[in-house]
Image 1 (tube, helix red, strand yellow):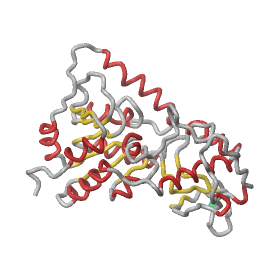
Image 2: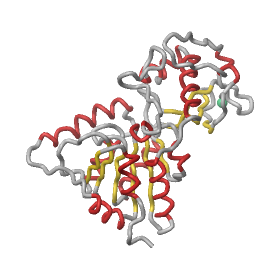
Image 3: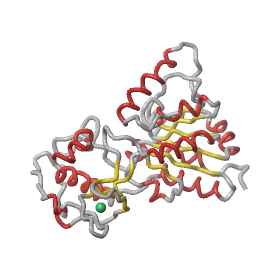
Image 4: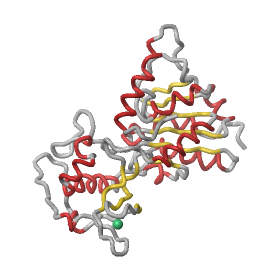
Length: 303
Ligand SMILES: [Zn+2]
């Protein structure tokens, strides 16, 4: 059971410590990369949980602003995606998110997103269920056609009012007049220094509070309803896929071990080699846009 009090960072360090240890044990078998064996299990699964991470979006060319070369101006996401950064300089943080929203207009779901969505639609007609649990905030699963999506980190295309708390979908481009043409990522770009009254504002009657992106920032807690719902999905799934992230990295590190502990098969699709373990049944190495479509296509036993 994961306590919702954990912040993103706390979950990271806590689970890293917890799940790393068993992999030091010698003599454990490597996970299988036998696609036919995976598909045999897949063909019988009634409740499939698919945990996705940054790797899925990376194949669509979505920048993460993390790691080597991952800068917006002089900063990385962990310096701007915080409540402190927003209260210090809401104009700069809104420029950053405005840029990310606008970039998404030029990106599209890739074959991994499409294979997941197609699989959900096909299986639902057979009375079987697929649920996506994602850390991605770009809505590419949504755009690919997935319906059952749990967004652990919120969405670039939702806002929350700092005054009344109202959350709303928002696909405006630009999100407000003052941000038009702003948000350029080059390191020598000057801050637009937009007055706070000209940043995105709440449209609820009589409110006019400052809006913020409805995403989970570093140091903030995850939404407890979404966490509870995710727990239910994971407690009832009979097959779990980890796509575009590794099981030592959040969010899969938080969920996959508890699924495996119930004896449920877990299959990883990612670019990283996983430490030898018997806890996860399958590992398919490579870009998930290549490995996932053949794994999820119609099985011969399906109607
Ligand atoms: Zn409001």
